[in-house]
Length: 516
Image (cartoon, rainbow, N blue to C red; front, top):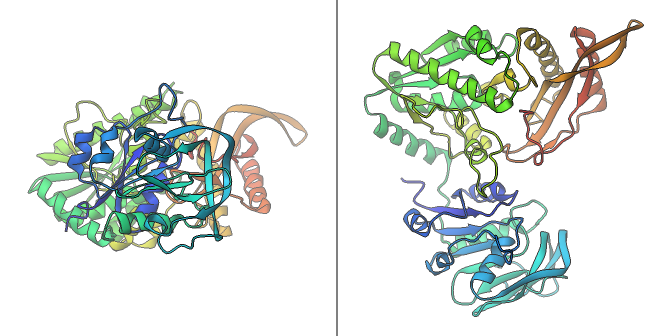
């Protein structure tokens, strides 16, 4: 079974919730993928999507430099759902009129459905009102020929629109966000009603298809896998091993940026509880020498990424004719490493942006279509134990990007001690499994303190804890004050060189989860 034979294509116009659209569609067991709005029409045709979603975005369709997709996509005979900006774009390109609204709509709004078919099938019309989430300063004033209003709100006479003969629909609200209480109904009606998709995007089917794909690509060749011990690389290794068995050799590189005792613990786990062939490389001195004097976070990531690849290539040479490198690149890595609207890349990932231009090994990235929660589901499907699956994410560059400024042995020692305390207290309190990620960050500043009646001028540790589903968006965790107090007191009392602890209450966006 080709689980990609049915897909919903999402064209991104810069919305902060575009990734949520993909997640919501995949929750219905239908594959979806995101591409920039500039995707050429011929490529869209070649992909043969069952449906197309036009995302929201910050621009106005009447702006001189407004992002525009090819209007010919409305003539392909493929169902199209426009969301917010996407609905306004559909209106404008097909001959309707969009103008700045006298009263903008941001936040919760009541929707009155006028037509209980199409994307509103099964919902009531008339006086019944449904809570939806609006976020727009423009509104549709005049509809294109052949269109009719399907729903209205207090300030939007065309809060939802439909073509009366073609499968073209648009909504001014955001069905992908949780605040739209009928969002799942709308998306299901589009996916299954208008697009005619079947729910076959399951991890069981994914394993079957991906395993066969790896076998076809590799043949009798040898593969090395970058194994860090994190969820992504562990699942990658298990999946590739299922496909090709002993043709896989895993390489674990101790880059000197791991947590206290982590290398020994990981090696014990892989050798006692898996059938993987693992080579352990101690490269602490190599990486710390490469990072000496480096303070720019992008340069840190790239130096670490280049170092990993160099070591993998050297080890591959010792193993004979190795042609492939497997690594755990995820879909959020791919999305964050690509700019869809011509702006700056958020940050390069060592799995994606840190690769040298002339790499001798061909990449195998079996997880690059998956979000983190899907990877965990896949790990359980492959039979990995929960202790491996539900580890909190740990970045490939390790503690190197949790030390702001230059990385040194002394600063690593400080951060490792603080990190142990954070993990111990989070696990003891039961919050380790409740939050997405929790860790300590060493800041590049010193502050004045008082210890034993003496003035101190020492380091600051920042605590970071976030709640998330797929790492594309995240909110800071509301940890209990007594838990924060215990962590702070222990760090200040037990970690020599720290006299202040602060708590990060930033969400993503606008911040990122990791500080670098």
